[in-house]
Image: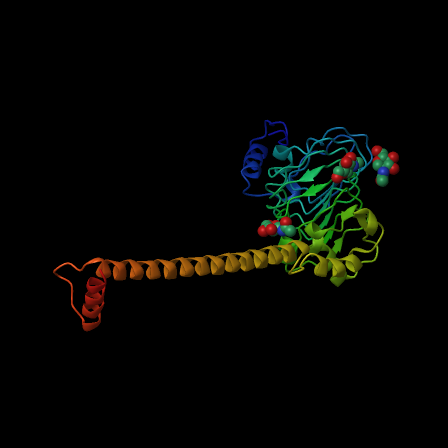
Length: 317
Ligand SMILES: *[C@@H]1O[C@H](CO)[C@@H](O)[C@H](O)[C@H]1NC(C)=O
Ligand SMILES: *[C@@H]1O[C@H](CO)[C@@H](O)[C@H](O)[C@H]1NC(C)=O
Ligand SMILES: *[C@@H]1O[C@H](CO)[C@@H](O)[C@H](O)[C@H]1NC(C)=O
């Protein structure tokens, strides 16, 4: 409740304050006070730019619509204080020392249309950071030299977003899947980042080509440095989707050889088996014939030929 003014003895004012803090009414007339070193006007604009502030201003009018705290050294946006300003439409935090913003930072700013986070020291943007900002039209987040990671779904819920500027950060890849789905988006600033021009960033490269932006160039790999993203994107499209690579060809050669070898070996084996079988049959036949000649048991069937052979044999002995 840091935003609430000091309780006064006047009963009317107390009631008004109560209604105000419970959110029943919020009218410019009821806003009280103005933060130190800031200028507040009757248009609900609070101007605190360049005042050497190191912390977020306290005692802000609850109905503030525009808050300008640029060119200070503010290190943190306190969620509790900020989210009292539910009528805020315009927030300029550029040129401060912000290192972190989270899901709760902008949790209640549903009317916010303009947000400037440029010239800070942000390093990463998480999923849902801007999720509650349903009315956000313009987001400027340039010149954060350490900002190297933006979650793929960071802007997924900002259906009203028209202008996004992430120029001059430290971004190498940017998953544009959720950006493509934003119906109102018409301008995206990407220049001045060390973009990766490899397959993991192919979608962005192709997209930039469609948007035809001239200042957006590759930072890596070395052989693409300084070349326009869109230009490299066309090459990546073929390079990253080759249906057959050299390993695939090698695979086919090996498989072919294996099939050939297996065929040869099995044919040879079949041959050997056939030869052995034929020999076995022949041998069996010979043995049987030999048996008959050597003296037929009673059960022997006596064909004429056999009989004659027997007789011959007997007469010979
Ligand atoms: C940032 O703010 C400082 C004052 O705090 C000012 O001297 C400097 O010029 C500003 N930089 C930009 C880029 O606006
Ligand atoms: C930018 O990111 C690279 C890694 O991608 C890192 O080595 C470098 O220190 C970063 N630059 C800054 C200014 O943080
Ligand atoms: C981009 O993010 C989506 C999820 O938001 C994911 O399904 C997709 O695989 C990602 N694309 C790349 C190239 O990482």
